[in-house]
Image (cartoon, helix red, strand yellow):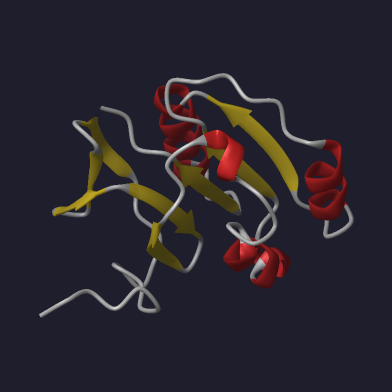
Length: 127
């Protein structure tokens, strides 16, 4: 049965237990491809490179901004500077955005989750 892209993989947040080889492990599940981890669900994310990150690819973050204080973006193995228009759009919704490579992004996300902070992560899968 195909996976419904409009349904979450998990209907709650989860720490990322492992990553690499194009995917992630979390909550006894595995996923090939990028992930969008929100405080209320974990979703497949179609982004494969940082240059594809925009308001459209982050629409679930914008829709759920009232429950998010920080968005961590894992940019794969690349370094990416958040465009000012995207940073300002999220700032207007009181969401701080921080971009870094996927490995450090996962570690930061997991720590912030452990502190019970209102954090989301948009994570590009790495080979």
